Length: 123
View 1 (cartoon, helix red, strand yellow):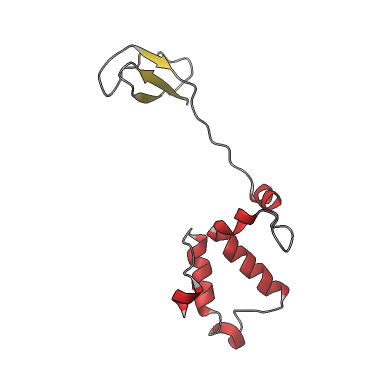
View 2: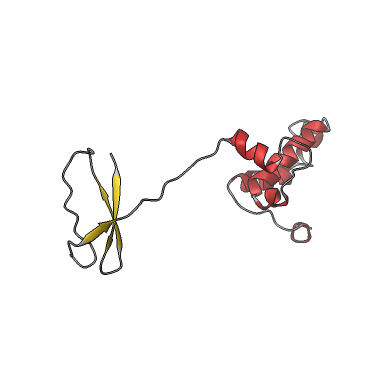
């Protein structure tokens, strides 16, 4: 089920969904109604595996090689959880539950893409 993209003389790009590759296609510009459209090379997506992302950013080591690693909030939470495990801290235990409740909320928000508040804002 391909999606074909066309460029119209009016300057608009339009996408058309086709059920089968062999189906006829007579595209009409949705903006101006023109039928003189030129086919474009479509963009495509490439998705990396989590393993590849970690290898490229250096997450596999204790200190990531790529300084932009911590610009992604998901990596901040991942790194914090990893370090707590390395230190032998079980933040779900009764001993640490109150201490790390705010940290857990911050990590959960980071996993959703929200950048953590600055330390000054948290105090």
